[in-house]
Length: 309
Image (cartoon, rainbow, N blue to C red; front, side, top):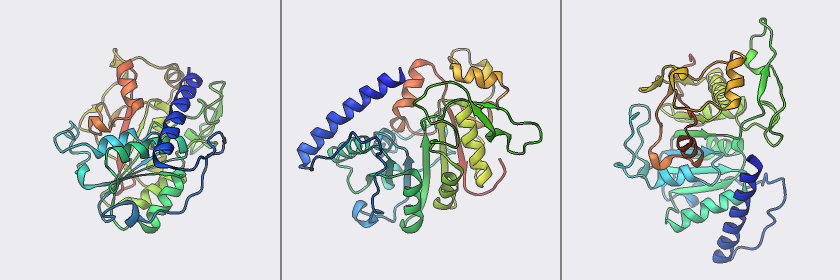
């Protein structure tokens, strides 16, 4: 299923890319190269944003830019959510930046941004997660108010083999058999690393926040724990997840069943939100698919100040 969906998405994006290039007279580029880690120069912020001093919202690994595009067109009325105390931004007065390694996805997002006349407030880049944050730290003149890491491609499921004397037991593990197309482990190919989250902490404003979301419970827990280790503080949620075992209407994925069986930490308690943390127009396609299929979404918000989790 995973590979079929990926192939369909790639075919769709290739078609969108050709259409965009023909409309904008862009020279043909090679898109079949498996190594799409294209190196681009740091953007000149005054060229991509009309006012580069506005608060910045960043979506790392944005894919086709669905969340960024939705937030960009969210009015104050649309942006009303239950968790208003968690994040309070005027999306119409923010710059929005999406970054992804897929040239196809970024060309699609950029073409939609152009069609919706969002140029000057929305920008998409083909660049690595760490590189975009390094560029922001070096030169973005305004405050960074929100960094989002939403539904990163999960690593192959890990079976914990740490002994009781290990101080970092969540990160000592061995891969069991699973989807061969996923990153091999937390340390091999997975986008969200300790270094990435450290860069996020350095990039955000003193009142800035980090949003983490995943449909894989073990991935969500590990991202949150690593973020707290580098200096973020998990925020109490207005609508917290009290007991995952009581959510009878939510289907439990096989991966989560394995995580529970091995005694993994659950994504429940005061730091995990049972309701969306972004306006509905800012939902990603993965989040909407999970909601429609009755699959769980694990969400938490962290702030810059403090180190306790």
